[in-house]
Length: 428
Image (cartoon, rainbow, N blue to C red; front, side, top):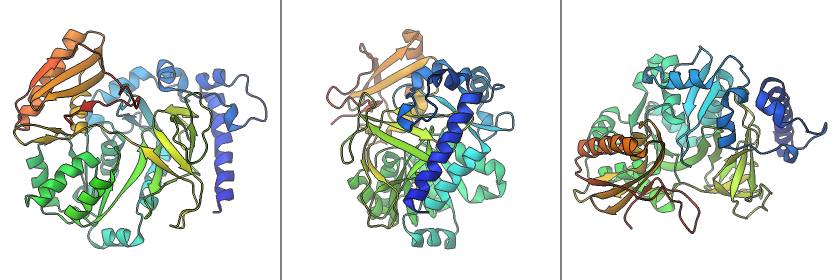
C-alpha cells in the first residue's frame, strides 16, 4: 500500500475502535461524552496507567470479565499460554515505570501481533531464508511468566505442540551454566532475548563454553547499544537486530538494515509529545509518547501515555520502507558484577522481585561489589522487605554469589538529571 493508503486504513480502524469503545466500555463512554461529532485524534483525551488501573472493570469492553478474575488466573502459573475463558490471553507488563498492568488480548489481537512479528521481523530476506533452511529452531532468553515474550511462546506451544522441538524459552533467572548447557544441546538458528542477557551469553561464547551459530539474533525489551550489537555480531556471527514492542501495543516497530525502527502504522499510532501532551516536531526528543493500538478491542489503548522518549522521523529511509521511523531512548538498567566474577542481568533480578506480594516498586543499588541496598515501596515495608531479601539471597546463592543486602532508608529514586527510573543500579 502507499503511505496515504496505510494512513487512510489506520484512520478507518481508529474510528471503528473509538465507536466500539464508546458503546462497550463504560470508562470510554464517560470519557468521550463531550466529543464533537467530527473529531480528530487530538480531540481524544489522553489516558494513563494509574487511571485505567483504577477503573479496570469499567475499561474492558467485555462486561463479563473482571480484574478479580484475571488476578486469580495469572496467580496460577499453570495457566501460562492458556486462554482465560477460552477467549483471552492474559499478560502482565514488565512494570518498567514501577507499576505493572494486566493486559488482555483476544485471538484476533494475538494473531495480528504474531503476524507483524513474523512478516516484518527480519531486516534482510536472506536471514529469513537461512532461518528456514537451517531448521527454524528458535531459542529465547526472557523472564518466564505472563509477559508478552515468554507468554506468547507458551501460547504457540499449546496451540502447536509439535513445535516443542523448534521453540524454547530459557528463564533469565536460570544460572548461566545451565543456560549454556541447554543452548549447546538445542543449537538455535535464531537467538532472542534482552540485550543485557545476550551480552552475557556472548562472553560465554567468546570463552569457548558456548558453541552456537545462530543465523540471526533478535533483541528486545531493552535498548540495544551499538557496542553491544557489535559484541553480539563478533561472538555469534549472525545478523543482529532489534524491535520496539510493549505489552500494551504488541510489535510496534520493526528494524530495517539502516537500524531505523519503522512504525507498523496501519495497526499502531504513536504520537511524540511533550509533558503537556503537545506534539513535538520531527527530529526532537519527546518527553513521552501517546500510543493507540488499533488491534485491541477488548481492552482499548487509545492515546495511552507511555514514558518512552523518542525522536520521530518522516523523511525517506534508504531501505525502501516508506513507513515513518523513530529512535528510542530505551531502558538502561545495569548489569551487576560481583567479586566472584559472576555477572547478573538486570531483568533476571526484576523477574525475582516481581513475585513478591505487596511489592509496588523496588530499586536495587549496588553499593560495593557484594553489598546491595534494596529500596522498596510497599504497604507493609518490613514484611515485604523480609520476603524480598530472602528471595534475592536464594537467587544469588543459586548463581554462586554471596551478598549482603541492606534495607534502603530512601524510597526508589528517579535519576535527578534524566528523570528516568532504573530498577537495578550497578557500580560505575
